[in-house]
Image 1 (cartoon, rainbow, N blue to C red):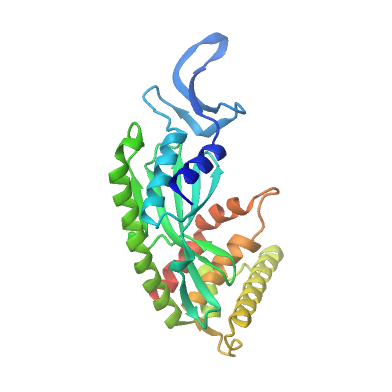
Image 2 (image 1 turned 180 degrees about the vertical axis):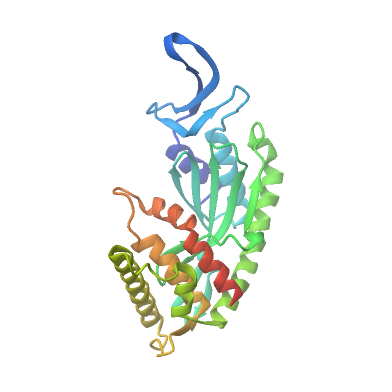
Length: 290
């Protein structure tokens, strides 16, 4: 996708502004606080108020970030846009970046997530992977070279050279990430012990806790067995030994695809919820330490 098409796609998805308005108290009382509101729906944006010094970023800022990524990844990216108390752009680089992990049936492809929220934190971008075997999309937090912060200043478009350098760091991070994944794939864990380290044992005095624990364990094992069969790997042995890579993806996949979420949760909501799931973070830590 050319830089022109990237810009058009992002602008079409975010064809509204986020504006700052003063918040009043009872009987028209003035306050030092401001709220953020969407121009198209008047919906509240963010989790709280801001001060008069707060400068909301614009769609043009998000366009600049996306164009910088496009410059680095061979001018052939695809973009998907989402708004959830901020702008998110999910970027798919060309398939030439694919890495094969097992007989060309277990492959990973880079994905870049740009986050421009309205919570006062620096903008961020991360490179993660999409695993075609199970449709998992994961951003691994422990691999430092795969996560960058982007300082928001007035008009990011004037900082394009700096932004391009930042996204070049993520391109180099893809090599590091695939090396980490390859190491995880070469190491083994005992799946029963792996699960116990993450979730612990249920309270046997609580029938509900026992049921939740059993259902979750069964769902994770079904996912693991299904993915092993699909990849052509042998059936799980009686010792329950699998690669750390498979173990991590079973937990991450359960959180992203199978875990109960609020009604109406979109696929993108599920990706974000899984990325913030403490069980997924612990699974990543254990898999990297295997």
